[in-house]
Amino acid sequence: MTPGDAFEVGDLTVHVLDSADSDAAEPVSYLFEHASGTFYHGGDTKGGDHLARIDERFDVTLAALALGTVGQFTRPGETAARPVRWYMDGDEMVEAASALRADRLLPTHYDLWKGFEADPKSLHDHATSFVYPRVVEVARIGDRLDVDRPGVLPPEWAR
Image (tube, rainbow, N blue to C red; front, top):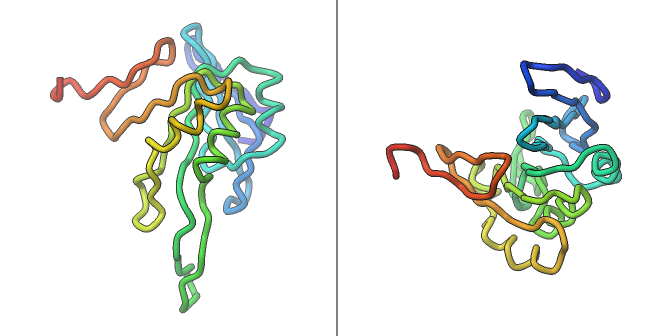
C-alpha cells in the first residue's frame, strides 16, 4: 500500500495516507470512512504537515495516535542502550489531534513497551486549552469504542 491508495470493504472505505514515522521504511497511516464516522489510525506517526492535509480532506471523528516517552533502547547489533523516541509525547499528541481537528482522541501504545510508558490521563488537562480534540478517550486492551459516539465500553464479562 502506498499513500493515495484507497479500497472498499463492504460499506467501509479505507484510505492509505502519509505518515511521519522515521523508524519505518515506507510509513503509512490509515483512515476508515463509514456512515457512522471517520476513524484515523496514525500508526506510529509523529506530528507534521501531513496531518493538516488529512484535515483538509476528511472530517476526523476519532483519531488513534501513539503516545510514549523517550526510553533507553539497544538496537540489534549495538552493545549500548541509547535514548529512543518512538512515539509522540503528550504535548505533541494533543497538537497532532488539533491539526487533524479530531473530535475525539484515542491514545495508543502508552502501555506497550516497558521503559516507554506514558500516562494518557495527562492528556486531559493539556487538551482543554485546544478546541480539538473535544474528548480524550483512554481505553485498555479489551475495551471497545464506537466511532459514532463517545464512551469507552468495557468487555462484556466486565460489565
